Image 1 (cartoon, helix red, strand yellow):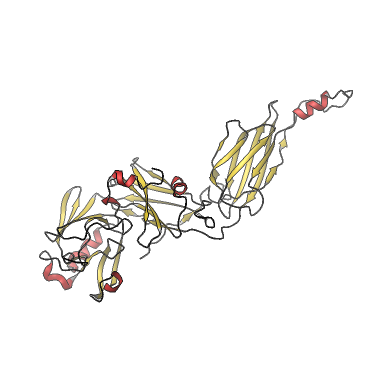
Image 2 (image 1 turned 90 degrees about the vertical axis):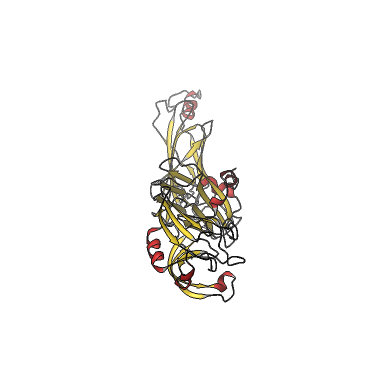
Length: 404
């Protein structure tokens, strides 16, 4: 099931449209002579030349210019004293001035299908000041790379929820994309990006904290991706942003040896549910390690043929809580009622009574970690099969960064 993507936002730096041109400086009135009555000795003419303001050029230029390159504002015959670049909505594009003061370069690349306004002020060595303005546009991207995000924008999630971005098409320069992504938290949470392959084979990058999130943390992701190329012919054509909140400190511990599920809050058990896990000795075993609740999917059809188990089952299942993309869920399993708390007899999922499932489903949050132990699990889910990030040490995880 494909979650709803975070909505794109118009970020100042997203619609970089590059305009045009050599800007015509607007010279301020000078106090020197215009040369009349000079007697032809050339001194007045030299004074006029010295009072001429610097000229300013902007690149790239024109209407429908190519996106994906920085905006540059260059002064000739003087230095830049200020540069202001704004987008169509009045947002500001930041940049840096060169050491000699003659070239201003935007911090990010020009986005696709964007328009911008530039205002520059200059000053010559003789003190003559000038100003110039220009407007410019960039062409729309012909081939785009789109992004799917977790968690949902504005949601409150469990302490195990990573930020996850899945790209529709491969990302060639992972470092450039990673540099553009900014995570801000209300308590300076330490974390790192890590690259992996999503379950369907697409490129994916996740951000997880060093440890489980602290309850109440406010999290903001800014993803100013517009204008960044992901291949020779494809680029991002929009920026994204989202905010979410971390809920209570809750962990679900599933002990398949004892056939029970325990919900812990702030380190203390608050609920115990008898369960039946995956049947030992084959492909029907449950995954072990730490998985994270991906989504609450209600009543769904579960068909064993979709997970490589032949015609073992095909039924409607209530209160379905997805733990891996490969098909491990916690859910109501009334057909296995005689095994709850006694034996593991499922096809890999964590089954419980309908009453227990209904109540648990209502209270548990997406992003809650499930820590599953037992003698006969089938190991740890691969990175990308759900949110298996927590099964790697912090040092292992940091090595997945393209900037490490």
